[in-house]
Amino acid sequence: MTEAFESAVKGSKSLSKRPSNDILLKLYSLYKQATEGDVSGSRPGGFDFKGAAKYDAWAEQKGKAKDVAEKEYVELVDSLS
Image (cartoon, rainbow, N blue to C red):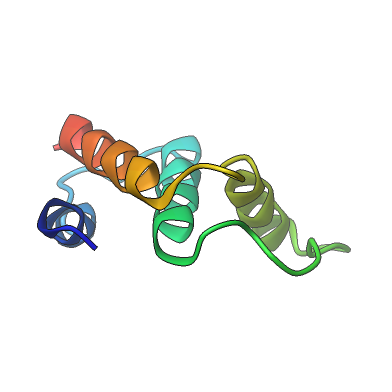
């Protein structure tokens, strides 16, 4: 993990204004891709709408290199600050 990414992760937790749900899902998916790689496991179903949305957002990042996901995460957090 790069220093800029670690700093952005800390910064994302202290944003002055709560981002929209779409932005939060983008942050989540980029963070997961940067730290864990491609999504694994099965998609939550039933009435777990939040879990399914998070899974889908992460699945959209599939194949993205960890360093690219880190860079995009940092840029997104910077744009929100």
